[in-house]
Image 1 (cartoon, rainbow, N blue to C red):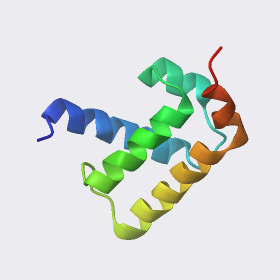
Image 2: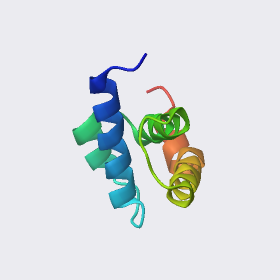
Image 3: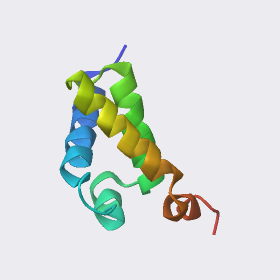
Image 4: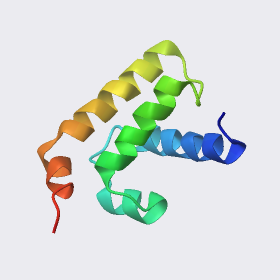
Length: 84
């Protein structure tokens, strides 16, 4: 069962992803706001969408899911996953 904090955090992440979708990946903003690299952020947004934690219309949800999938798979985000 999801807590209201989890649902609120998911909603915040989805709103952020929607607002920034037309622009380049805001790596620094994602890290400062959510404390994680973009790949983890976009993975969590996709999970929230698929779990139905945030209500969007079908087209908007599908478009955001695809946007997240592309961001997760981008070369830049994969580079961030490598250990230092």
